[in-house]
Amino acid sequence: MKSNWFLLTLCVTAQLIYGQETAQVHQSGDAVKLELPSAINPLHLSDEEWKKKLDAETYYIMRERGTERSFTGKYWDNHENGIYICNACKLPLFKSETKFESGTGWPSFYDPLRKDVLSVAKDNSHGMTRNEVLCARCKGHLGHVFDDGPKPTGLRYCMNSAALEFIPNGKLKLK
Ligand SMILES: [Zn+2]
Image 1 (spheres, rainbow, N blue to C red):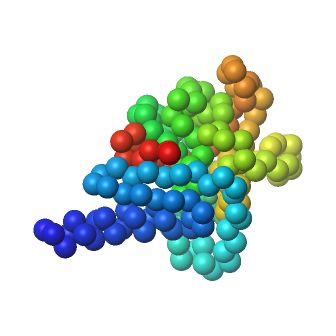
Image 2: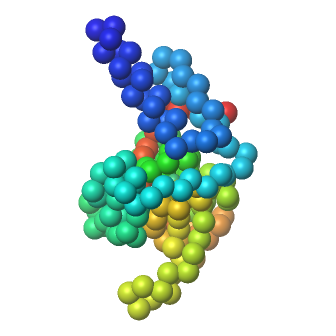
């Protein structure tokens, strides 16, 4: 029992520390505190390294700019309070307070947790011009941003569930 608990703690800690160069992770019991780094240091891994770290679906979405089918991901209908982090490098990206019902079948937010946790790039694929949203640290593809969102920003960050990991309140606290 004791060794099981130790292994669980080790897994959770390793998962949250993974890829974080400057974030500090503190753990006591079930709660995990994660400090958002003051500056985002880019994380570069080769395709081979990403393939080893990510499951096939996450690799397809995040490294090959894939899109999951709407209403199939695990977070479009998630109403719990907490924080959404990058599923590849674990950088905190969105708070549940900024998630809204877009009706699209993808988890949608009107504001990131902090402006510099996201990068935006022009995407001209599929005969459209869209703004692609990437994790600022690992450059993993997250989704797209549109200008038909609700107030106060008017933006709609349309994300793939597979590019996110949800940490419920109480499990992770931003310092
Ligand atoms: Zn990332």
